[in-house]
Length: 205
Length: 217
Ligand SMILES: N[C@@H](CCC(=O)N[C@@H](CS)C(=O)NCC(=O)O)C(=O)O
Ligand SMILES: N[C@@H](CCC(=O)N[C@@H](CS)C(=O)NCC(=O)O)C(=O)O
Image 1 (cartoon, rainbow over the protein chains, first blue to last red):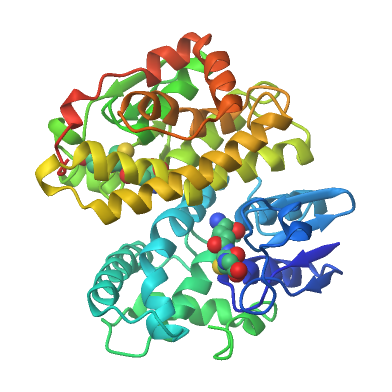
Image 2 (image 1 turned 135 degrees about the horizontal axis):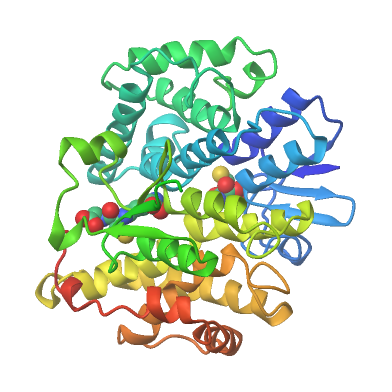
């Protein structure tokens, strides 16, 4: 099995963290700009969107980080996906929320204030992105206020991987942001997992 | 008998149309409640208790309250559509799942943004750069989808699945919003296949006059 993608990508780290949770054997191939441009025929044949991560499992090729995570757990027949259909639905709800709400709102600020990539310096867009990211963090903060250890309740699920990585990025913002004590305590719980810690390091925010 | 499923959301909402279409395909009893847009109601405490993001759709099925249109569609398909719109085989379903996520994280950011920038924004306030960006995004993702549909009749593979639902709701608006699109013959053929399904016509071919020139919902 091969996992393609650079470690600086949050979507790649979701899959790498899960692979560590499951104790999978895999080869890692670095792809993605600036390390290795995916806009080449060899990569586009795997994923026409030129995005990482991509999973290659024998003849089977899959992209989209959340689809890859769900596939790996079901393939192994074990891992952080609840068996109960309603709990699974709630896990998927929070996965979708990370992918379609939380993460897009944060993108500009991540480039400007976390990864500090040249060219991402429009003050108006930084402000807008930080405002959107803060609004979503407040929803997380309020959800965790009832004392639940993980996002859907007592059990650790795939949704905690995706949201946890995003909360880690929040803690790496260079600048003043509102305090989010529940979210930080939640991140602390996640960081205690041996499989988690390597994917939340200052070198790969 | 248990209570019927409740779907919260106005039928002119693109994300609500996914869940509506899915329920109609599955043929299960449900009630739809109008909220959002001209109906309002999303700031009411009862609604915010269901979805703190103040958005539609939301479904209630027994003790479960769920938001995010794709999570709703996946749940309904898994519970009521295993073997039909929800493939049982893991690898087949993973591909359906992949395209479903692609719609949420890529495809929809093009065409829905174009709909906002071009249809919902009054002409006097239109931002040409935003329209151009959304149009580029739409073209790029339509080409990916068209190439996919050159290799299989449906988005997820050989048969109709929930991936067709989340992507297919775009077709009526793309065809009617008055913007020239690149030639996409495979998408056109797929559109004709979907039009043969009564649930598509019923859930998706919904007049959206109430949204034209209305930036605020
Ligand atoms: N929805 C996709 C998004 C993938 C994505 O946006 N990947 C980015 C990195 S986070 C990428 O490939 N960028 C281009 C590059 O690295 O060259 C997923 O979750 O897998
Ligand atoms: N990611 C969410 C997006 C939901 C969304 O944006 N809903 C829109 C309608 S399509 C909404 O609630 N708008 C406010 C309104 O209708 O008043 C989902 O897929 O359910």
